[in-house]
Length: 425
Image: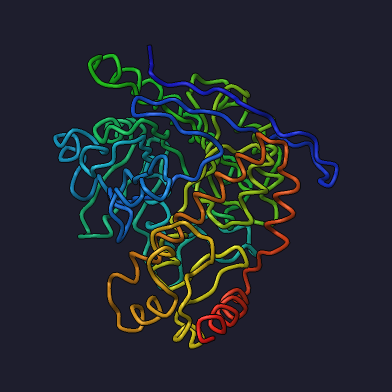
């Protein structure tokens, strides 16, 4: 008995307005700490906290699970501390399902100085020693693992497949990811192939270590292990990687690596066509509203991204008409919510004028209220997509949402002007 499973509830019907076969579905992931109805957005609590927001608020806004980062928690406070507290959920007072990623992305992205993204320029795909301008390389990869320098204090550390499994078992999340080598879009095809070989070998080692620890700790709740699929923008590499990882006894799969947004539909579809239908597929690091429709139609089930919280802390707010910055002067006297009809705590209790003031005054409540709204917006959007799949209305919902959504800042001007005139009247 693993206490983990996945059941498909409904499949997306054929949509003749789209050129490719639709692989989207809804389902239910079962974990020891509860179920996750998919498609679902999994908010990121990198260091065992969704920045500025209480876990109770995340529960109230509709989040079904949260994802934390093994690399960051390994460095601070230490996986042993989290384990002694009773595991990630108990440590952060989150009662529902939890995910941890392997730390591979952070080891390598922070190691080459890019922080949140792996590459800013895809014009040169022949460079394999990729380092951000003005930065020193802090991570060195070999066939056995990665040696890296902590971005916190300069101390030296070593991550291998086995270490990643040990750290994630100590953290105790319901769903964990195999250690992989995450490449950039700037890496050459030859290097992508080297990285795929390493990732496959590390995946096999992760499975062996996962089994060993699981057997040694029969009293612990089962932790599902997802294999990670790389391959950048190359169809043959993506399909081969998916086929190789699918042949291993993973509980689910993560679609990772560098993905060009304009090719995301193809890349996700290539991978999902090679994966078994009876296991869940998690697309790592995707969080913009437009992207969910594309990725879900191509077969992805769950998603995580720091973007909703990060842009919120910079005063950028999502609405059905697009994203806007609440610090724009037009919002100074807009005594209306971020979005009329939104049921989040922020929109039910505060106005754009108040958020404008709080950000301008540099009050910390500004980030809290903005994050609550953005997380609610994204969680609710993906929930609505799930409902649309199950009712057979996905094409209509996609057309309705994307027809009104723009990411050019016009939402704030239009909605702010309209709401302001009502308030002043």
